[in-house]
Every structure is written in C-alpha cells, then in structure tokens.
Image 1: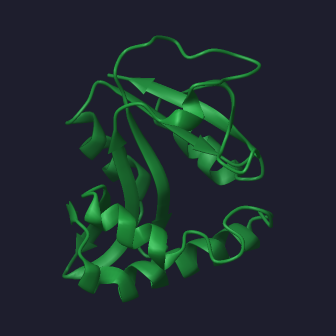
Image 2: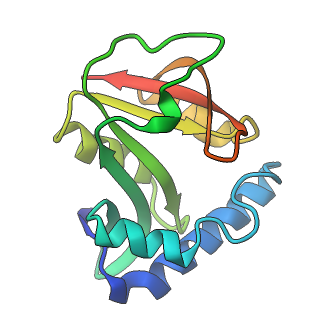
Length: 161
C-alpha cells in the first residue's frame, strides 16, 4: 500500500473514509468518539496545508487516512495515572481511519511514521476498544490518560523503535 501526502482534491474520498470510520465505531459500541462531524473539513484542510495529512492508497483508491505530526503535542504535556517512558522527540498519529476494505491501515501508518522518528505516540477514546487492542498488538505501551483540547480524557500510548 502506498502512503502519500493528502491533497485538497482528495477531500471527498477522505471525508467518505471518515464517515465509514465513524460508522465502524458506532457498530462497535463506541458512541461518543468523533461526534458532531469530527474531524471537520476545515481541520482536514489545515492538516493538508501543514503537510501532515496522509492517505493510504491501493489501486488508485484511498482506503485510509491519518495525520502524522512531528514534534511536541500540547495535549501530551500533562499525563495522569501514568507517565511517558521517556522525553525523547516523538511523532504522533492522530485521526486515523479506514474504509474497512483493506486490513492493516494502522500498521501501515505506524511503519511509515517510524521511518521518520524513533518514538511514536497515539491516543484514543476509552470506548475505542478496537483501536486500543490494535495498538497493543503493534507493540505500543499504555502510558496513562491525557486530555484533548476540550478537556475530555484519552488513553495514551507510546511505541519506541
């Protein structure tokens, strides 16, 4: 599977992938994550402008999307009920979604990210058991609870190369 930077012309396909991701969450008892149209088109356009949104493409079709951000994430400055294993520079995967037709989107994104940094962080909602289990299978360690911009908690994980 090819990973490439997302482009503005990819937005209809990207929005469709996020719609499918939200439907998957609802079908798997995650009713409270990615509500009210999150992530918004405006946020995705900003990610594209910052060169931090990527798409997973196979046979000229977008099957997955994720944000990959190098550098400190302000929401990771505070961590409760645990600790980060180190203070090394890291990258973060955010807003990852799949259309459900290809397996291994998270693994593909993680492999891509680890080619650009040696320490990778990720977080997810407490109700997103599928994502929590996938991260643990890939070797991420649970680190504690962080808080996103609106103050709501997320389970935080780190993987070191």
